Length: 100
Image (cartoon, rainbow, N blue to C red):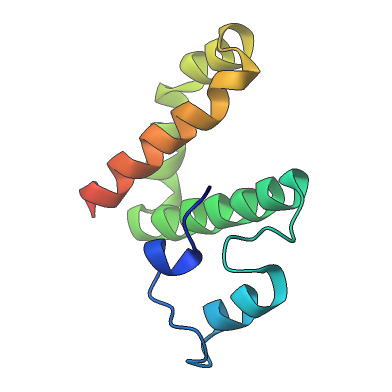
């Protein structure tokens, strides 16, 4: 069983925040969303965070950093089994949380 949104985010049922709205709409564990819908939300969140970080660093620096890992990105696509993608994403997300 997965933990409710409130375990990960600052949301309290009935507090009127946007997260409370999402919780009411999709359930406290997003059980009303399909796997694909959850992945689409995750993609949007990642794109937003990439754009924010790129703005902070400047586009030139962001593009240079991206170029440094192009080979690794291709290798992930080629060699990392799809069933390991979420585990790697989870590891990176947890590292990013502690990197703030």
